[in-house]
Length: 225
Image (cartoon, rainbow, N blue to C red; front, side, top):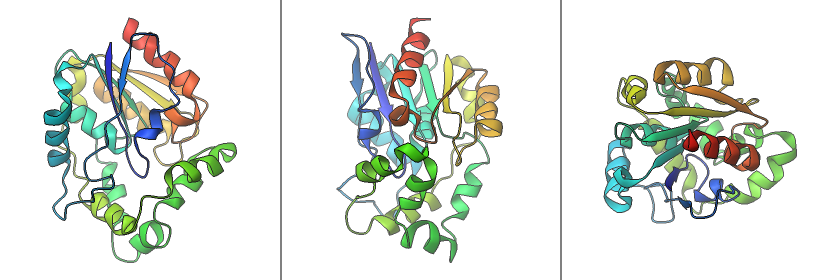
């Protein structure tokens, strides 16, 4: 079983490092293009990131795609018909307009230039996880705040992503206390649009990292169906 897991902002491939999957299963955790140490192109786009991932990691050959946050949009864009898909803490519809608003003048100072993503980490996880989340994901190097703002501004997912996934077996594995993409209504909307199943985990926004056992069990059960 080959699984490709795609992270979002402001995390990294480490988001999935705590998952414990059956022996023989391969978990591939690519760096999402533009979010790593090689910098973010001025013309960064979701389509460019998806095309780069497809070419570098042969996403069509994977048995399943897992996507969190921005990575969930990329997973939906990359999914071929019949491929299993697990989404967490993401959106596939107009909710991204609110995320793009964080890149507006003045607002971007609060969300990006003042906090460089630490606000998302501090307020996104359960209280007992916040310090460890900051230690794991707060440091992305010089210029990270402006890079985050640029990526947020470019978050324009293709229309109809939810309907596109109706040819896939979709699981929405969600943090019950996710403040950024609330389980209700956002997770419910994702499950409804994709005609998938919704499973809530005891976590905030970062369910694969905060609830690795529950997320691993949900992923394994989904793929063994």
